[in-house]
Amino acid sequence: MNVCPNMFALYPEYLTDPWILVCPSSPGAGLMKKRFTAPGSDDICMNTTWPTNSELGASRCASAAGNSYAYLGWVFDRYGTSYGMLPMTTLTTVFSLVGEADKIPANPPTEGASQIIAAIDALFNGQGLVSAFAAKDAARMAAAVDGDIPIAAGLGNGGSSTVYRIREGIERFLITDINNAGSANVAQSSLPVTFDHVAYIPSAFNHIPGGSNVLFMDGHVEFAKYEPNGETFCNRGVANLLGVMSSVF
Image 1 (tube, rainbow, N blue to C red):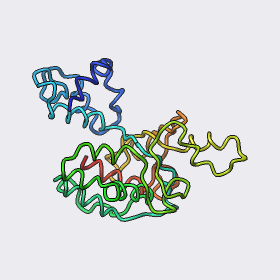
Image 2 (image 1 turned 90 degrees about the horizontal axis):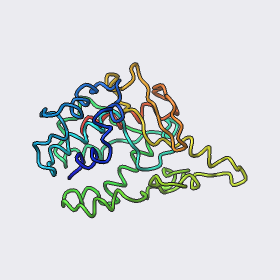
Image 3 (image 1 turned 120 degrees about the vertical axis):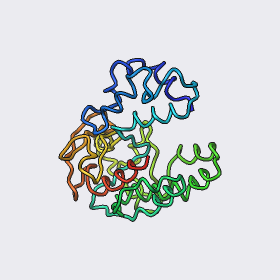
Image 4 (image 1 turned 45 degrees about the horizontal axis):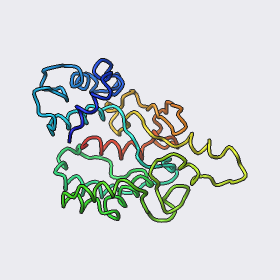
């Protein structure tokens, strides 16, 4: 897994301006900055004394890049608490499978945003990601995560039975009023793509007492204050789910 050398060869500015990948307000900002900018340190994700295919180097680089921000590879348009919650039992199974169950904090929340949970369940079980991981079948794992996710009717995008992979023009599947010329823009402006980490533990937020800068598909960024029962992306259902996942991955 030759991640770091390629990334820094293509984007050398990361070495001089690590805040591109690390939020200065992140709880782990200091360590992550060190991993990008301390030549010769054991903590740097790209240490020149390591082989270029170093799994350790790639792993540290990935953890540094993912410390501050999360990226959604699929379209989630029903993340508000009004859409309900589902149990996170599949995650427990996955964590046990990869040997990381011990990293889950004591007494974690047991429910998360229904659409995201349904997509995770379908991805790991229906799409065969769990079995592919157990078999160490990279081709099957790649195929599982590189497409749309069929899920139960009503839980998909726009109330359909599909959660779509993010791609150009995907917002057309969310248009419910064909007579409204601006509905595509509305759809794009409400689809989160990248955001500051949110969690059920206040200290894990990049921005305390609680909130997240969210980049939407139309290109605008909006700060969403954490509202436990809210309809923005920064709510209890999303925070529960991503908080548990980030503690492990």
